[in-house]
Image (cartoon, rainbow, N blue to C red; front, side, top):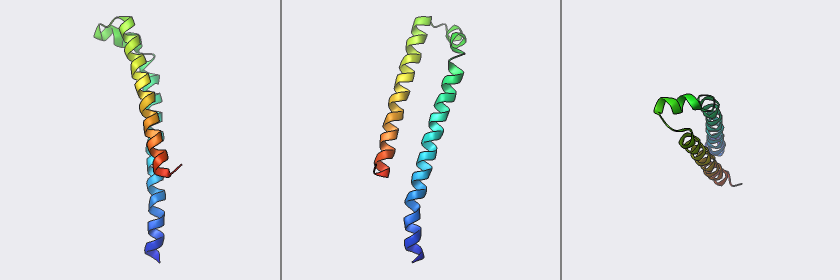
Length: 82
């Protein structure tokens, strides 16, 4: 009986761990944008990149990050069965 109860609790724990990791990743991404945004001009100057190229590279980075967040979210939804 205890084994049956333990096996029922394991999927909930793994789902909670996956959700916690996903939310931590979102927080880290927001923190990353909060650091890179204000330091953008300094980063461009350090690497000798024109402002136009820097803006495009940051835009592409942001779009790819948003896309990957959606892919991860859909994967977690499939795991949960939502």
